[in-house]
Length: 219
Length: 292
Image 1: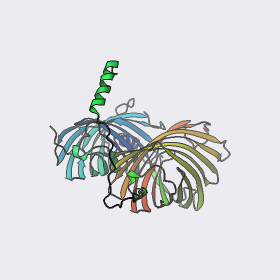
Image 2 (image 1 turned 30 degrees about the vertical axis):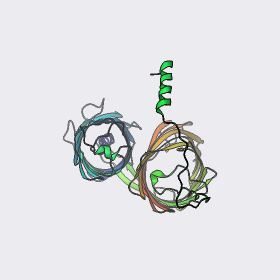
Image 3 (image 1 turned 90 degrees about the horizontal axis):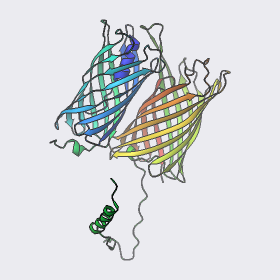
Image 4 (image 1 turned 180 degrees about the horizontal axis):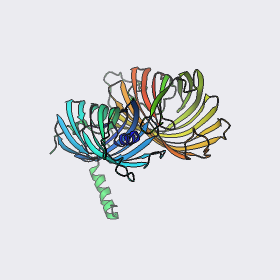
């Protein structure tokens, strides 16, 4: 189960590194971050690290598309992941923003010690952003999803339930840092086996968005 | 859609008609300047404190020295069974010195590193780890090419040499953000490894560094690096080398640069090194700089 967990966290990642507000048309956001996770075993906490790169582009004023890359390190064999993450805005005012993302990710075990060595995951994520002031936003991001490992049978497919709370500090859509903590519950699809993964992450984001445009009232 | 010849002519006329004609005018006068007095000399450009404004290449005449401490921690996981892995750690403390100088449009750099402390799992304690040098030339305002050489002699049993050619470009995204994109090619030459034949590993890689300026003096950056490695002489009997002849490496890092003085930076951060054996590395250091 522990290696299934590793594949799962590599798929889902940790640090969201984004505001709940979607990018405006033509704006770009680039983020890089590192997450540390603790996977609880019966006898010890196993450290697990994940590096991530996210790039997003605003296709309309209420929708963006994103590309994300990640890779594990610090424990056993390396697992890499690549995925897309479209996000749409549901509600946005100066004080609060709500958006919904539909990340889909494929991960693979480079050493091929896992069997099968490829897995896929989808985990719709809701973003709720509470603007504390002009340069600080609290971002809540609950998510639910599943991991499918083709050819493995039902035994190693898992369901996911989790969430994170983070801060987005800095000039919105231009230069922000994002500390974040979260929890991910992983449930086997066929047994009662359940694990909890605790995460802490930190990301840096740069973009070419305009704060004036960000807070402009939408039609 | 390309313009027809007639359309092009009409466009040219429209431009001639609409575009304002240049008007010769006297330069604005300084009321404080006496008649015949030369205009004051333009002050030389200052080296920017903000991380996002810093150029890829040091200006000519500038000198920078950067002592750094590195703390590395490796979590070594054994899998005696699939359910009960065991975790043991290995740690090292290294020091490095990086010196750079701008000369005639070039930036010349050199670096050395020493191992200070190491756990029993690693054999790099109180030893000369290696060193190297690099030369960077900037062009087209925001591009630079770097040629880098590094020799690693961390272990008496291993000699390793690295050659890299790096193309970099820096783009400002906004007044408080910038992104640096680089591509690199190179070779890792392993000359001496316990009686095994020398091997070369060629690499093609690309990376992105994201820079965010938190305030006037504090900048943060996150980086991601992806490399494709191909071992030209795979040695399947050597267990410490990758199991296959090709593999993909990725590194990630978070760092801060605090310009506490026009001539002094405090730097720090941590890196997730996931190329080869994975480990986490923390670093803290100072950068002393003199810019003419």
